[in-house]
Each structure stands twice: as structure tokens, then as C-alpha cells.
Image (cartoon, rainbow, N blue to C red; front, side, top):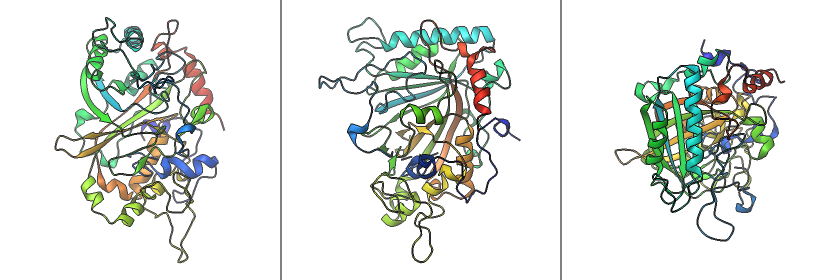
Length: 425
């Protein structure tokens, strides 16, 4: 039995995997990933949003200035939650995910170093053009930095601490270099300016004395409306994601209102884009469960919820049994929604890949979804090879009075709130 099997959850497991869960909300029942991980892409591997109009997107920093200039507005780094998870609502165009080895395990020193890291991030976030900040001479722009800590590090503060469940092995882990699995610290940097990302990551890593890079990946996103963008397969990602305070509280955040934490899962996939594009157009759509415009094969408007019960006159399911949309749909596992903010990348050989990044209230959401995809032989996963993976507790937000990392202490409200949430429902 793995750690995740012992982790408290408000959802029961063990129901038939071919039957939609009776506990799902309407939004969860019909929409995750726009139909899957990719929904038009890999949900847990690649993604799909219910809203499609640009004026529906509730921007919260990181977008163009209201005066019409192209300069992005700064994203507030402090607050109840860290930046880079749900703010800005439309993810920045470029990302750098760096995973660090960090052997430090002394409880007091870990919290002290993390506090220093948060202060350094706050300094960088307010850098303005022409400032004396050496790593950001042109200012911070809409830079965000999100910090996560590994399950192993979290467990130093107690075996039952939220976020202490390790990501279990999966059937497609065999080809992954062990050096690209796990890690102690996550630094997720994002900005519309890719130039300073590496130097900023270096400066932040230097704060954690004794750390070194375990693995990293740069990525980019096409034009986006909210979370929705096209993945390297040409289909939409981020179609169905939690939006607004109520949905984010239900699906992503845990902890007291002033200290919001979440669980991040990272999985990197090299994609066989050429092989996928060699498929006839209709086969590509059946593989995904939506067409290239985002319309579910059950019918309806682009980006709308799929009807998983819809059938053709001959009794055949309109959304195929092995389509990504159906295989990754949360209604079959009783899972919540994931907030996905993935990035495409180019491989060393010139191919394409996807850096899948999801945020969820508990690790089960990801684990049960990927397990089901493997069990059903998700058609889209035949064109994806996992090359890296890890999970992290994204620490609550911070400010001058509440340093980054202080929530790790045994008497923290984060632990108490998580224990209360585990007994809901």
C-alpha cells in the first residue's frame, strides 16, 4: 500500500470505473479537462474551459496595462496564497520549472531558509525598469515564482502533515531517468519575458545553501484566454478548469483563509506529434474526444461540457471508450478538478513535449485519474512518453509578518485545517 492510499480524502474510491460517480457536482461531472487531461489535450498529460470569451476572463494581474500599453502589470507576490497558481488567471507565455536537491532537514533551518527565500522573491517581484536589481535590470514585469517542498521534506514535520503523501509509481515510469523523478524543492518561474528566468532561478537557488539543480525544463505557451491554449497536438488544453473563488476553494486550495496551500504535480512528456498528425482527422478527434475547435463529440458548442452518455443510433458511444476525454474524466473516479498551467517545449532532437503542471486540493485527484487512464489504455497516451515526474506541497502565501515556510510548524493552522477538511462529507 502506498502513502497515497492512506491519505484522507472526502471522496470514496473503489467504485466501478465505468460508472460516473454520484457525488460529482454538475461542473465536475461533465467537464474536467475539457474532456480529459488534454480534453483536447492530455488532461493529466495534456488539457481543456467552459468560458470562451476574452471579456469573461477575470484578470488579476500579469496582463496588459489598462492604459493600452503592452507592458504587463506586476503580479502581487504576497498574500494568502503564492503567485503563479491562480494569478495571473491567464498564465504567462514562458516558464522555467527547476527542481532542486536540498539535503537540509533541520526543522528550524529549513523554515529559516524558506523565509529568506520568500523575502528574496518579494524583492525581485517589485523590481522596476532601471532598478539596481542585477538579475532584473528591465524590471520584474509579470514575473511570478511559486515554491513547493517535497513530501519527504514535509514529513520531517510529522507523518500526517498535509502534503506528506508521496507520488506513487506509475506503469509508465520505467523509462524515466531516476534523476528526473522527485526532488526536494520546486521553483516554478513564469513571465512574458523569458530572458531573465534562468538568472532569477540561479539567484533564488543560491538562497538555499547546499542546493543544486536536479532537473529543469523551459517551456512556452501559445496565445491564451484564461487557462485555455493549444497544445503541440493542435488541440485545446485547459478547457475545463476551476474558476472563481468558490471553485478554487473546492478543488485547489486547503488551509485557513489567510494561509492557502495546494498540491502540485509535475509530469513531463515527450510527444509523438508526427505520429498523431499522421492519423486521419476523424481518428484524431476520436482519440481526444473533441474536435480541433473544442467541440465534444457528443455535440454542442466549442468548449462546452461533454455528454458521456450520448450514443449513436447503433448504440456506439459518441465519446469513444478509450478517448482521452472519457478516460481522464473525473466523474468516473469521484475526483475534483485540477487547475492546469502546462507549457509546451522542444526536445533536444527537435521534437515536441508537454510540461504538465496541475494544482489540486489532494494528491488523489491526480493519482486516480492517471491510474484510470492507464487501465483504460487512453488512446492519446500512446503518443506521449513520460520523462520526468514529481509532486510538491505548494506552501501558503507569505508577507512581512508571515514568512514563507512557517506553516510547516507542528502547531500551524494549515495542519488543523487539513485535518478538518479530511472529515468533510
